[in-house]
Amino acid sequence: MRHLIDPLDLSVEEIDRLLATATDIAADRSRYAAVCTGKKLATLFYEPSTRTRLSFEAAMLNLGGSVLGFATADSSSATKGESIADTIRVISCYADICAMRHSKEGAPLRAARYSKIPVINAGDGGHQHPTQTLTDLMTIRQRHGRLSDLTIGLCGDLKFGRTVHSLIRALSRYENVRFVLISPEELRVPDYVIHEVLEPKGIAYKEVTSLEDSMPELDILYMTRVQRERFFNEEDYVRLKDSYILTPAKMALGKPDMAVLHPLPRVNEITLEVDDDPRAAYFDQVQNGVYVRMALIMMLLGLSGPQIAEQGKGEE
Image 1 (cartoon, rainbow, N blue to C red):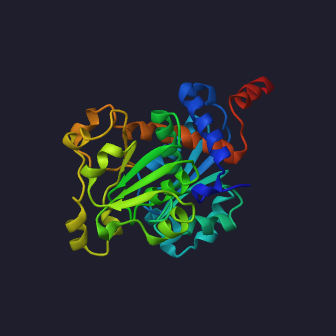
Image 2: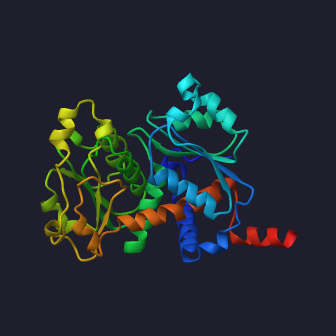
Image 3: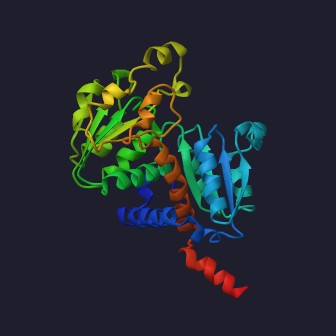
């Protein structure tokens, strides 16, 4: 039994195979419609989510499985003081696989230690978000045909942005990837990302404050929102929330084949006018998230593909 807690839980070869499966699903989703018949996904979302939770649910339903769980901690036994360890032990009796989001870093890892079913980290505080990273990798590969030899600009909240931390860790394993880290000083990427990921591997990076100056060199621009829920006081949030706003004028500075990604939700960091630019890839990310999570559920459950559904029909 395997879990996905950190992007590095999967080898590069496994990621490549998973993305190949997701791409095949995208080409003809109907072929996978009965792969998870009889299987149940539990969604344990202690922190609010729209896209990630619904994406996991859509993925399991698309595979012919079913879904149970809760959308907020208020509707769980956590309000009664139940521990994560006890919750996952109980859920292991009801479901075949679990997706967990929690505000506390390390919560999904703790759950995995007590679980009898695969646990997927659907985001833990400001730490990691591995399934968003897989979605990002699929979208980048769609746009550029590769995950190596790229200059990636990461812009906005690089301190609390778990999607940023996960993406840097994942892309650091590919050749000739260079990072441009664009943020105000207060929201710069945590030191551990620099000292434990980038510098030990000799990966080229630079920290800057100007989005406009960086635009011409980027193959990928990964925008993030400044997250109000991660701040300790409203004053700091208000001061920093409009640090970077992507507009058509700024897009004009970018390469013709640059792709703009965003994990969503956005607030005002990308104007609506940018949506009409063919380089805007963030809604492609949303769709790809369903395909990637379908492929991941299959991988962790040990299901190999459409032939399972075909065999099942034959046995009936």
